[in-house]
Amino acid sequence: MIKQGIILKGISGFYYVECDNTVYECKAKGVFRRQNIKPVAGDRVTISVNESAENIIEQVLPRKNYFERPCVSNIDKLFVIVSSCEPSPVPLIIDRIIASAVLKDIEPVVVLTKSDLMDNPVKGIYKSVGIKEYSVSSVTGKGVEEIKKELSGCLSAFCGNSGVGKSSLLNAIDPSLNLKTDRISQKLGRGKHTTRECELFRVSGGMVADTPGFSSFDFKNDVIPAEQVEDCFPEFKKYIHDCLFTSCRHIKDKGCAVKGAVNSGLIPVSRYESYCSLYLDSVQVNPWDQKKK
Image 1 (tube, helix red, strand yellow):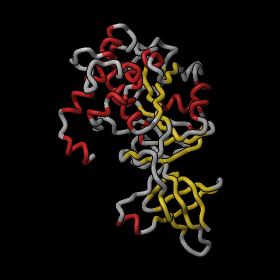
Image 2: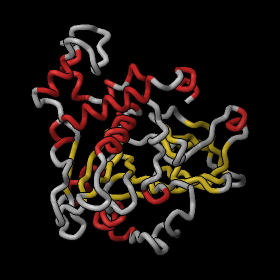
Image 3: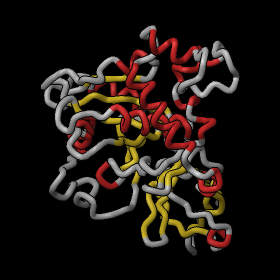
Image 4: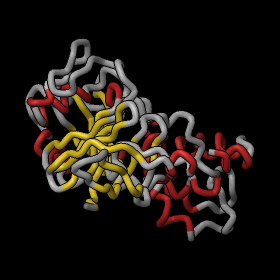
């Protein structure tokens, strides 16, 4: 019998695939190894269910996106968790993550935690450029219901530095997770950083990818091709066609409408500075190295 479902996790060559509210233990076809395909959590797959033999993953359906570290695919939303206090937010890091998410066709959602302690210094920046932004407090419950609604119907992941309040927020969203930073999680069955495996859990009508520490997405080594950097800053789009030159890179170009929008306060300075940094990083990378990525 052939069924279609989603891989929840993979452990030691076995894959656990959810189909019609039932989880099947499966092995992958040997041909995947020859084709250099590794099934990962989040993959949509077809499986053959066999009563007297192993269940087999027959096909990995086309992926919307893919991450090697951690191994997960088809993420719809990436929640970028930013603390209002310690650790202090760094706009360039936030914008690098958002740009990489946009490049992979993932909707970024900025979540400002610990709002009961103080206002976040980046508050309002992302909302002003059309990126969803929420202020939340795991202590008072502020904003938690809004995050639950964002999770519904999506495959999501959380990303942020240690200490920004990811685990506290997830516990507030679904107390049955009972996530702890220094002890074993009762539901997930492991402690902090004890595995590199990724697993999907149903939370608030959607699925959340449990990655090690909820913070291990390897964006820092992502180099966005120079010609695509501007596309990762959606607020630039309405101004780009007004630039004097079609080849404008929005750095030191004459007649740049994007820089004009920055000077007029229509684009936040921090976002523009992040764009410049990412673009200059990109042009310093050999195009061949970019293709290999």
